[in-house]
Length: 337
Image (tube, rainbow, N blue to C red; front, side, top):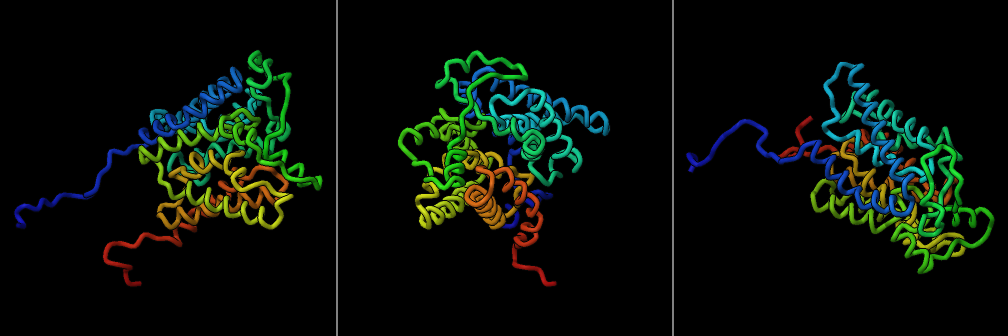
């Protein structure tokens, strides 16, 4: 029997998985969200996506040349960073601001840590956090979708845009809570808008259907696991349900939070970043619960109506500690100290 056993060098388990394949899968998964953004926010949405991708790629190429490192654009990580950053921006953000945010994403979020695989924080969220801190008014100016305001398709890529603005559903609810009014009712019309994307918000976060389609593709391709998305959405739902049960007049229904804002997009495309998320399944559950809970604490108790970006960055910071807490146990049990 032993003659039938072949002994070879490690690794003994292989998988046709590469950084390039993972990034291409993520880019394909983001196509539905990009298509919906182009439909509702027209030319400016497409220009924002193109600007972010071009500047992320150009910045990485320049940094590699300065550091005398091999060109890494072939792994498409810079392209994915640019797409995710663009989809997390308001539709009419000036292109020069998007370019600055893209450069910060690559330099501060990625290169200073040593490049892809060594970064601690999600690069796209680093760029978005910089833009939020630097250009707060621009980052909170929301635009009426073109299907509501017929003038929207005529928008150009000019830095100054004259257009109608509209609060996001989360902003409506936050304002009602601050002013002592009742939280917005999650009506059938609002449910339809948050599912299809016909509502104000960041480019890629308005349509729950598009995000779910992209997420289903990533799960089917096994590019991401279900652990982190399930932990993020489950913990957020529980936190929202507790708040709603405590005071149903002040807080919106739990399902409203799942389909509004960046929660769904972040759970499937941002929190699942394999570089900045924990390695073990137990660690992924802890990480996801942390992201979902912090997001809801900010939404319910904080000043901002949205909290996904801050939650992801905070949990990125504790990911090394989670990995230490949830160490893999080698075959045969724990080694003796």
